[in-house]
Amino acid sequence: MELLVIRHGIAEDKAVFATTGQTDDLRPLTAEGREKMARGARGLRAIAPKISLLVTSPLVRARETAEIVAAAYGIPIGETTDVLRPDASFDDFAMWLAGRTARPVVAVTGHEPHLSGLITWLMCGGESSRVDLKKGAVVMLSFDAEPARGGAMLCWALTPKQLRMLGDGD
Image (tube, rainbow, N blue to C red):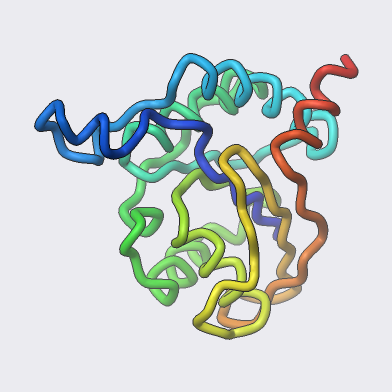
């Protein structure tokens, strides 16, 4: 199976949003973030033409990112899960993903530093992140066996700018 790991797009400033009194879970993408993510999603589709299952964190900015990806692919968001929350355990994610191995390409949208730590853990088994995942970036991992710590192979990693360049080439 293949796993597309997508960091959410550019969101409202955390400190400024905090002045609204709302929980950070409700912090949305900016207009610029939505526009750049739409271009990046077109680029993602150019390099990864099929997604079998699209899944998102319950936080607004990740859900909005997943909605943009869903629109680019013409698919629904298949699931919202707490295993993509910023404080979720990597073991819980691996167990959750293991239940979806019948899907050839699973795409997930989430948050930093959780996603870069998760990618490192899935590839190397290490707890400390070795990945710089910018807002709107995507990493493709593959698994020859059931998803587990240290069991993933890095296929490719693209920055948001690279994805937009691919998307603008349409």
